[in-house]
Image (cartoon, rainbow, N blue to C red):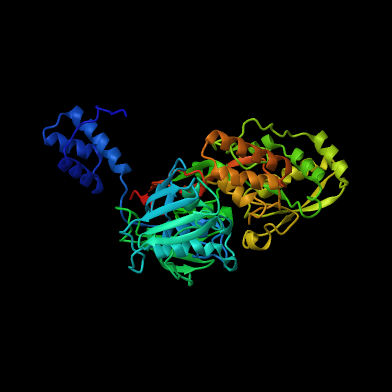
Length: 542
């Protein structure tokens, strides 16, 4: 570790006095005069004031209220963490509840409600010790019964949880003591701490034992639920008994959704709100040109796929799928749609920043001759097919327009069908032969394939079925050797690249925007606004 000995040393009393002066509104010049009056030389006083001013600006401050706007809203929004399916659900989940583990900026799981997580029997049995100082918002202490109940819930088919496929791996969940839980998996999985932290973003957040009514939230999170109206708004107020010392910083967070991006940005520009999600690259200039606003970029494995369902025509024809994949002018999409806030993808879901990314997989090129060849072989030349786009799937209309223009060159016509963002995920997504989706970055390769490409995955958009991939996925969970896992995940990437109906042209950055005096945001490369965990980390520099 390297230390900087150039910083002037001052005592704790002096440091408190400087911090108090800045809080009262003192300028740097005022502080220099104060230090010189106390006998410090002008040079040392100037340096000391600079360090103190920087430290003061970076120190979280308590108090204040913010309004946060998500890109979607719906009357089916929920406070049930096992059933959340959109960004506003996930953000509220992280406000009101906590998990056993949480991911840091390197996507490494860190302890949260758990104070110890240990495995045995080749990562098949996991023993978890809980913190003993955690209270729910109703004042009751966290116990192992709450954890057992919460982890078991998503396994119930009647609940309809999108996280069931992860919960089913937990074959046996029992309390081995008042503050100890034992999990036996159906097979080894070295990634269980990652899954507990972020599988499906909020699927394994902890609720109180026996909870069935989610009209409000009773969790252990940094904020308490003061109000929740699905499709309207929520109001969160500081949990003064939160188990993380000093957090959270804000007094209150109001959150709601606005489907229209222009309206979201106008609300931010006018000062009505403080933080918005779902900024598209075409709007970046409006954000960066405003002196009071800042753009917040999160790089990672997010993608907005063009999906062809393999269980119905025309996607059931492999040649048609290949024709569409060769139609994708990825470089044009990266430049024209994403304004370079993206990297080229290859019709498989593991991005180059992932440690298991396979760089040896040949890049599928933009090739009109091959596209024309496969279209002719499919028998669908000179036909028209509907392609569903929506604001809910970011940039889908812009991508679709480019694909539509290119497809005409080989005798293929796409009729763009525009549907509203409100209700898209329940009424349209995965319900049409050709449509667009939106996949957030995932914390591990295992989560990517489990949630989106395993044969029985709930979010298997193209209905891709591959027994070899299913087998490799199980084997990779038991493999502790990273080199062997890399080979397995590499083969899975090739299988998806060759056989899935999910067309992935680029991996896009996630763009959010906020007022400049909102501090504390750091990129966590699985989702926008710090993996939806912004609430306990941000503060207002008032």
